[in-house]
Image 1 (tube, rainbow, N blue to C red):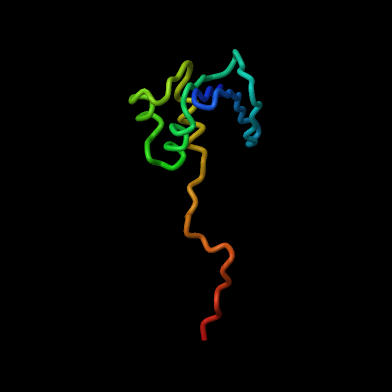
Image 2 (image 1 turned 60 degrees about the vertical axis):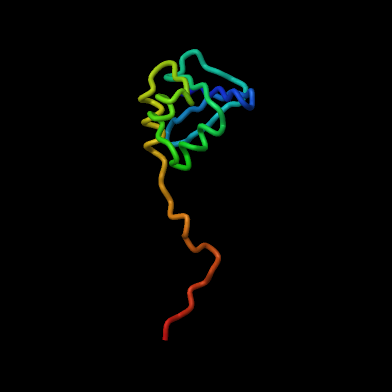
Length: 96
């Protein structure tokens, strides 16, 4: 469980990963969470878009962590990286 506190949006969430399902509850925090993060949405976007790593965002002060930061690193390591140039709509023309 990870508590997320977004300072710019003034919102909070508790995120749970259990049985390969990632779920969240808005406007809630859990005292038993493995880690609690305080950040902005821009900081999270930077990590998800791979502009900055989580450890670098913590070192630069973009993210404040209470608890086990390694649990957050573990969560991010589970995300897949997809090819942004994947052709979804365009049909392939047969080669002759």
